[in-house]
Length: 528
Image (cartoon, rainbow, N blue to C red):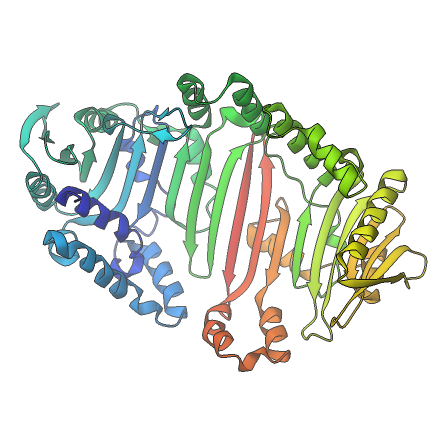
């Protein structure tokens, strides 16, 4: 059976989902939009840190409330989650309203100072290497509730460290240490973790980390949550543990690239009309994360409402197979994969290197108008011919479609007509392009490449500017129209989700590389 203290901490973790349901509808500091305040309690050398607003205040609270109010029953979300939380706490004679809400502040966070990996490669953190940091509006009440929870499970003794009282639960199912000071309650699995938080609050801490500060400077709204991990420290922990071989670790490092000396960061930001999720990682030329926009996304049809762009597929395949092959072992090798492809598909891994950038699209507001297709850069030659022939053989052997001559002028390839499908699927090549598309119109459009997709421009603006490479763009209104015009509007399931879908205008994903770091961003823009 879990301890009362653990139950209380689980309540705090669940409270992270309550957001505006427990938020402050006014007040707070409207200017404190992008912060990681609790990082000042995390040691400067922490391997990982995270913070999330559990009771948003000021502008953040307004933004979260504005968004939730858009959705059916969104204003009831907080109440429903509190009800569920209280049902979980009931077995320990606790309630959110009585034991948590009176002292819970805006943010809850935590840090890890050490990490081990067991023989199976699973991470393991000892009690003295991690702590939870909880902002509190009432230090005395916070101490009272947390110590009472600890005493219900075991013996609690007290000690003083740098003038701050520590309550140590040394027995029971889940021993831990508690300290309340400077507007926070710190709960660690052991006294060392809590002492580390006290030391950080008066000396060097993670709050002075420039990578975190720069990352927060990229925010497009108020930060609901932020996370940090020291990539190089994780690699070092893997090496010390011996859980992976040196060959495997070298391969992992090579896959990540020279950017391993940069931390991994994540942030969830909320504005009144937009939600964005960011990831930042080191950008390394030797296999790291350095994405570039596909050169083909801008040439997609003007009316495309869904766009996906991929850059330099052949090079990516080469890197992945090289890294997988370097892992060694008997279960996999690039040579084995290459033999299977040659025998079963008729092409080799080397043949895939002919593929460069790629882009895919969908357009149309009804089934009859629907156009779907993808275009690949593929230089003419034997490798491209082998790929096209392999595709033809694959379609024939599937028995799911009839293979016919291609009817697109000036192009080579074939057409596949599946049973009970309204249009042929064309596989065509012309110039330096390989196209797979539904119908002749989409095929010719992709081969010509004369479009200028509005969805791509809209997505770039949502991501934050021209320096972002667009990976994905989706406009929601045409999707709803497509379902509606195709008879799906009468479907009860669609009617139920339509109220949610109508709140989104554009969903976009993209990236930007600046110096030695790449920022990945996913954005959901809401309707006016």
